[in-house]
Image 1 (cartoon, rainbow, N blue to C red):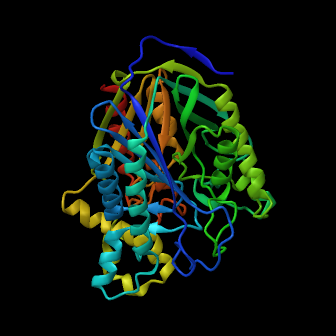
Image 2 (tube, one colour; image 1 turned 180 degrees about the horizontal axis):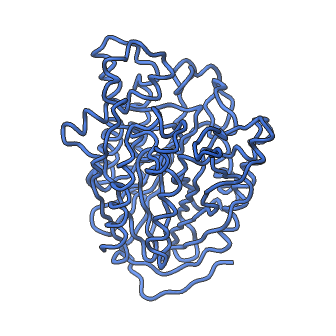
Length: 437
């Protein structure tokens, strides 16, 4: 049941939702393999433009594994121009499905200068999607809808998320509960630290929902490397909710899920994809039923960002001398970190942004941040409704807690492009955005 309360409203606040196909053609590269066939649901690039509160604000979520560096620059530049705003007021995130493309035009250019195979960084299709978004956003802005209310709801998602890092008796992360854990003993190990809540932020034109944003922290893999681009279980859950609430465009964001997988509840059986999707959709449904609506005006909208001067790991910097030594999978997972080190040396820093909507604050984090950052954000402002989108600029890779770098494990090793000092950098920026309003 929806509950309504609030004061005055303004007829100047508007929302324009957009949605384009982001499924690559057969023969092109996904992140780890070539696209060999297509029959699945396909990938989407969805978002909205918030108009009437100063320069427009654009939020975009793409069913790809990551968009980094100059890829982020170009997505933001085109989206900003189409919406009539500036790139600093655009947030581009991915849901992080693995049977999906990667985009980094900086990595593409670097590999070209080295005379190397561009592998998954070949950017022709990414540029096609950007062109589609340009047209879709321009059209959406011309057909925007008034926003009179914002809705906020949350609910527990049952039996989906689990922490992937399992510590041994010496406090070391020697066991990894990956997205599918075939070993029953590993699945049976304790749940670990997660955020069980899915958070929903919805925009309404009086009694009609216009757009729904959902936020949930988990690696979105049930199984992958199929040669077929697919949105995996979060995309299926999003589709289910779209069918149940067809008036609103449903846009899903992965939270701070760097150390979170479905491994406790997934042995890799293909049937589990639908089961996980149904569980996530059920949580989204209950969050929708718990939604409380409040009147909203342009004065209730805020946007601020802080640049992150991230401490770059030595492994990312020295990669330039090692490029030819590595296989395509390693390069697919690491070249963007080298590009980030070059960008920061040139004074280009990733922004951490915060959107305020009435009593809600939505943080936009880069990389694959650990769930501890999401939980810390909620603790910083327990008086507000906090939602977190991870997987913004993908360039840093995993952003772990400082403690995790002592514990070791996959995420805090070469998979991370930053050092333990990154925790303080990110927490300080979050606190400044959430507390110094």
